[in-house]
Image 1 (cartoon, each protein chain N blue to C red):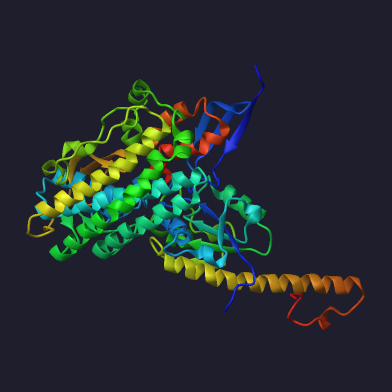
Image 2: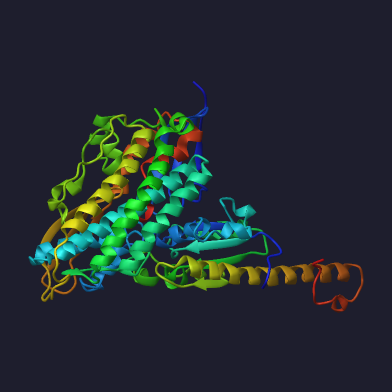
Length: 166
Length: 359
């Protein structure tokens, strides 16, 4: 990928992280790493977000909140699990209140391991997520086009595979 | 009397990097009551002592919180060393003190940035975090980790710092001082900052004492509580005075943290000048048998680790009382009577660290 077609916005939620990964996610936004220059912004509103960055593992109390937030993010969206706790539970996997990684509740697209993750690996994860987001968007537009063709009585297989992105 | 309504604040909220849930009871725009509920980050790591040996558990203790990570591991190993009666090499205690003060510097800079962000002061947030990167660079160069260092162990520390690097660190801090001055100048003297912070969220000295406030929250209300005065680590050989402010408002708490950064630099300088030569760790055999309350001063206040062993490799009990947990009752008190729009600033003024508080 050589350029970004859109400015992806990020929603960050701390599931049950120790803060280590959270402050590294924030460090990505600040002058040293500065992802804002690519148009990547941290938003507090799930309806504004494209990428769901989540740190820490799932426990009984935040299960519903993670699910709620995910359901509120408009499609297409990408979920990035940042830190080994979000991937599998990490050092806390045997704790009584930890159910495991984020993928126990919502589908995860990119796993970024590390304890704590370095900002470089978080940025790498986000860039990978952007590629997946683009694929999902293309597929979604294609699906919509096919549906419209079917409604118009045309053969949906006659649409070019590039989708409806102009 | 106007009608009361309840507004939920959190757990996912733009100003909070961490999940804290408050039910704010409002009359018009004024907060009249606050009902906090916690537990979104609870992992239950204290029970892991039954599954991990006491030497391995240092890594878990360090991951109680990612901001005060080093001081958590230091507190835990100090407790173990006290039970086992270990005389840790002096150089190791100095190195622990240096790294502990570095953690305090990075935590306070992080907080100043978030605090400015909660007031909508984006450029100060960016500048504070830019300065923080210098501190993290030194931490990474000497320990190998940016936020989780993993350098403390029972009986000493894992890494030594060369004298050249120590000099370089000192020069770096001295070079940073004028930038830190510029930054704290904004917090202490800018008219709009003063307007936002003066007289907002006042915690009286008596309330702070009765409700058990610790750290900068207590020191901002005129209580000179600083566990560093007990002289743990190498702090007994260092001269310093706790920073105390008397107004008890958000401005006072902010001023305490801003001025404490210079105290930390001063402590690091004294440590670097006095650090003796010698080994940095010792061989440890056996297992702890007994109990101990280990106390240290974190960036957010006093932390207590209670450790109990029975002579086996696994501890019987580990209990942590973290500063944010004790600062929640004062928070509830000082939120009463503030405007709804001031709530983010007041909540951040106690420097909540939920990862610590809920463990």
